Length: 191
Image (cartoon, rainbow, N blue to C red; front, side):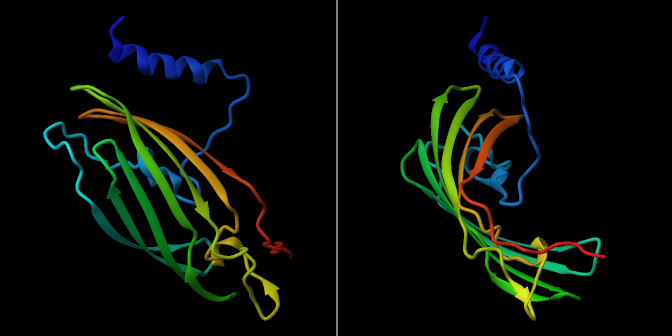
């Protein structure tokens, strides 16, 4: 069996063999855009060293209720050597709605990515990192706790790791995020 088939088959077999599996899409912390799991990473065998990059993204989101959420994120990528890179994500968030207005630095994400296998046809990358809370997710308005979409932080310290298989046409990635604490948000929906 060729190696290009064995690696994805082994990963699929491991996933299927798990007794109880739970999963979700990209988490609120956005770890699906970190390191090996980042969707727009290049696969280019002509350039040995990846250039350092800095991306600034801005988005505006709305919720089923009234808040409008604005987030600007600085995503900084540093090449340590030809196989290792380091990523820092610094988001700033502002929320405006009927329940109040909040703004501040969002959770800081840090990620170290290492290429663990490379060939002319595909690469396998591994990432390890974390998310540092910038507050306890306990912002309030007039003493009343605000819901999570008004918070600028998830309020948790998280461990993040993932692996990706990338070639010229595809990126398959999976990861896990584990929070080490609970946030302090006390908001409850009441009638």
